[in-house]
Length: 327
Image (cartoon, rainbow, N blue to C red; front, side):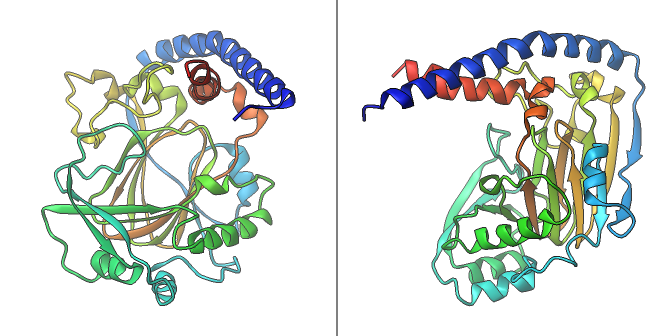
């Protein structure tokens, strides 16, 4: 399909802007990384507990502006949700959603929930289930000790029913903060006990709604990045650490600097919400079968000057400019 002159000019202007952003961020990222590396070598490791606050005592907008992880209680209750996306709410939804979908069952020795890359997760088999069958499979049957299961429902799944839940959450949060949701990047996660999201960081501000069950949370500040075995921002999986899927399994001989990092830990209980600031590394493990919602806000122009944004900026530059030229 041939593009109009206006479309071509817009694409060229966008490519130039993104490439300039990458060029500006490279020296900033280099200096930032050098300073952080020097500082990290002087550190001694420690462990801190992620604080908990009631939404009655601190506003969500204040939490976001402070930019430190917090677990919030009471954030879900005041929202006027047509369907509360806990186990009972999803069962109500299942009564009208009969279409089957694919469920991937993995080997339990590699229970890693992957957005990208490969931590050795090994597929056991694939089944087709309705939502009701899937919920029974996850929460009622005795789990097979040799397998683990997880699924991230996107906003388009189940004829848009999941998107309606995200829209209701967005409307409820709109009254609490001026941040705009990134609707397409949100979803509803259902996983079995032991499933791990390996250590990584994101460029956006996020909330993790824990709707059923509980999760173990492990977080590190952006300044600890040199201690966490990340690669350069031009590597394919830069925002994912090269530590083992469970960082506690790391060999001290291969990853000696991990011991210098300051760990922030907590158990996220049912009904609580974790605030995840941008570029904070986090690792999450399901302690039992559970339901949660990773909710993202859109990045703002001010976020793009953060050295950690170099990787997403490079990705945009590569996909929209370099790949197009190679076709």
